[in-house]
Length: 323
Image 1 (cartoon, rainbow, N blue to C red):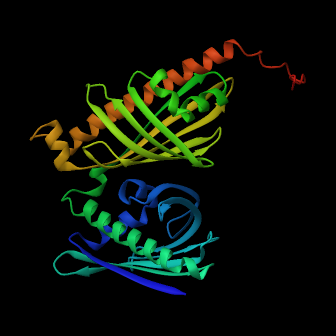
Image 2: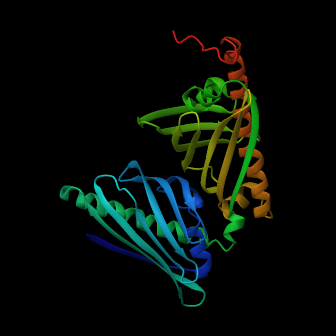
């Protein structure tokens, strides 16, 4: 069993720093290695979730359990079923007062490997990710603004006429977006592992500003596509989101959700010296939301067009041809 300890002193109150780590749903915009988190169980003191993260240059997924103690400011975690080369992984976050209003954060890991030859690689990966996570934790909590004003989540939901498979296919095949979406100029898409896509995209926002982003997407066919941007727009420290799809009657309910972590200094540089975080949130809500709404609108038009050349829904009790 290996044991590593990483420590960082952060110039922010312990309770504030604890809350950032305790809210794992925000991790994709706070911690660079995290791609997506899906909760399986959750209450105030315990949770269970599946997490996708970049480890040693590849996207890995596992199920973790966490026990949270907000009074002691302590979080214990363990992987349920680790994947090789990890045989077992657990650890602890702790947050203690330090100096005048600061916090000493201690991140412990305990783990073992399935293959001794992978030990050094895994130790290096844990060291790299832990160092990056502590630096990111300091970056988001030392901005001088409440984290709830820096991190924002918003969604747009529409009901589209068409087949769920067609709506999903439109969003999934982002390599075709330059021919399908007016705000997308270029997309490079690869899928090295089933359901995990790497995407680089050039987009034009409503105000004419051009952005290049790189993202990792986790796809669940017919249900959802979650993503985190490795290179977010200039005024953001992090940007993640997800598309969800479900059948409603004869249509499809599609939702585009964005979570952003705002860089206050970069936002002022773009929006004006006297702009506020509220202005930045409104700007992002409009521009990112407009792109998401445009994508869903075009997905609906695509699905409707596909439906025009498909046979109608079979009557109750009548099976369609399977030729």
